[in-house]
Image (cartoon, rainbow, N blue to C red):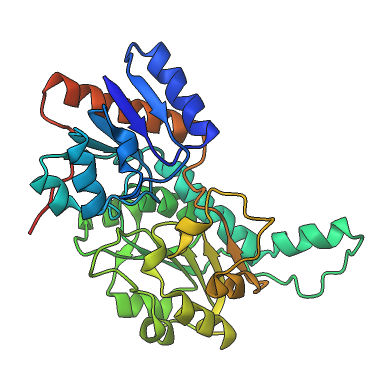
Length: 335
């Protein structure tokens, strides 16, 4: 069975080839570095399945063209599926599967890495000492012990993060549209309203999916309700935060620091080396100018264990599809 991959990097090819060849899958895999768009969907000609990632565009136009080329399955090698028009896929008879969990620990640990670096100014100290500057001026941090962390969403990644934060001795407040009170009792956390979470938290970390209800949930209004000097972390989806409102919050010192592994317009930059070009995104350029902001290139998932899990689960999803069995990790359009 032929499978066409879009938006791939060398590490994708290495991990998928290793498992495809050693795991008796035997798929005929074709890799493309370019991201899926309506204009290049023709590259999937002759394939029954395509595999895409977070910055590929599987909108209605792209899906119709994939269907014209004979594609019957879109396999996401990630958990999020907000870049796929599920209604169009259903109308075209194309199934959609994903990798619901590859390594929650990887993303949770990356969120903590951002928090620690921002709190103790590790990124600034690194550059100073390389230049022979060993001054401590401007590097003052704060103890995480005894502080309050607000975690939005309590899925697998959030629960891994909560375990780490509890280990630091932090009080953890959580918000979820479907609170799990049994988990809260076991973990020693408290579910609260978003307003209370914003008001009381010294650190806020976002771990909810991107939906019409959560899009730009961090905006001028919500920032105004936050505790002054809060550290904001986002390892989920870029459009959870209205970036211009975040910049204004940083300028007004309502936001003490921001650690971002995602950005709402990341597709033009993330996973690519653009260092020899002038940055045309003024908002991203402004964001990068703050010394209390850390931006990483959507790398929270990027561990050996996670890559192995992504490849194995994705290929299992495709094999199940090829066998005609019910799709285990399918996502469907819901009106």
